[in-house]
Length: 487
Ligand SMILES: [Cu+2]
Image 1 (tube, rainbow, N blue to C red):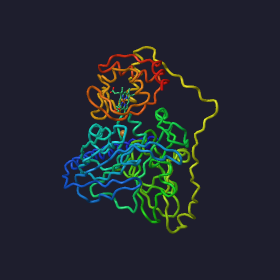
Image 2: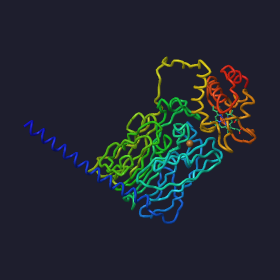
Image 3: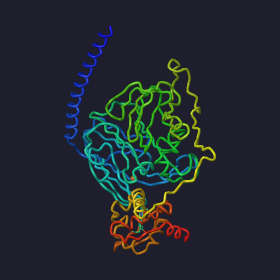
């Protein structure tokens, strides 16, 4: 018995490997053919893309032939409400988090215009996961405030793709809301459904704990520690509840385009009271059926479809459940229509799924004061200073201190910098605005004050003075402390 069984198993295993290998090579051949033909599709005319704010999506592409599709996307940095009484400065693609939804098809040639509003403080760019090419467009789309950039790409692969800002510090730009979705429909379009919605999860990190009121600044340390204060759908706690809930009628089919901007957390996406009839796994071409919870990685997406059979409130959650009830990852889909007692005995009672609110509590007496590691030598100061530069100053003043013409003055070989050390300390401490002249060129812009310790400011300025032909001035924490108390 044992023996025959084992042989049988080996036989089946060999057979399976054989079949899988054959299927795999067939698939590969097929994919090559598709990829080739997508690149070869000739575009026929041009049109301006319809962009929509969440939770809405543009009209289906369907059978429309491939075209040159013109996309105008504006970056806006603006204050919004995270939850009652808590405000946050969101950095957005098109004024919303997630950013405007882009809908295209295989074979389209997308001409992308990225515009950075003049009131913005920072440079930005865009990396679209639907782009075949280095950086997904990032290096071609880098724009300073008040500037615009244009690049184009051929859409080769169908699927649902994330786009995001990729300007340093990348994590910070994503954490502030710079992500969205671009859908690439296959040849002939997607099957028709009754309702389509756009939902995207993101995690947020604030200086204050969850629920602490006021304008909350971004907290870099919590972001690095992946210790989110808010985990939400569509940018804020109540974006998909109450009057903002999604709607459908009994008997309709619903398709959700679900993305996850991160920056850190993976979503266990689930709809309480439904089973997904179909899931386009990871937003690709593979369709899974009868799924309870689907995993959506940071920087990934999924398309989920289900038919609503009974009335009531369906609840969208990240099934990492403290995020749903204590950090905001909860949305609602209200279904209206006739009861069907055969399927379900009654409606779900509304109000059960009320969020439980700010849940981050600490035990008394467990917080130790932070130890500051002081640099022991000039070399170490420069090393620490370089790290700060790459995190804080790099985005505007650039990697070699060369700056950006008409927007950010150079720190390399800067006569303005070298003329006055105390003035440089003041600039980092308090920010700078108004007209200045650096190496004969006028700049009239705004540098925001940087929240750094005296030690960090000393290190970063020592690094800057030591680099790119500057005068090697040494800046000590004491000098910074003196300037700080002078104001
Ligand atoms: Cu950005």
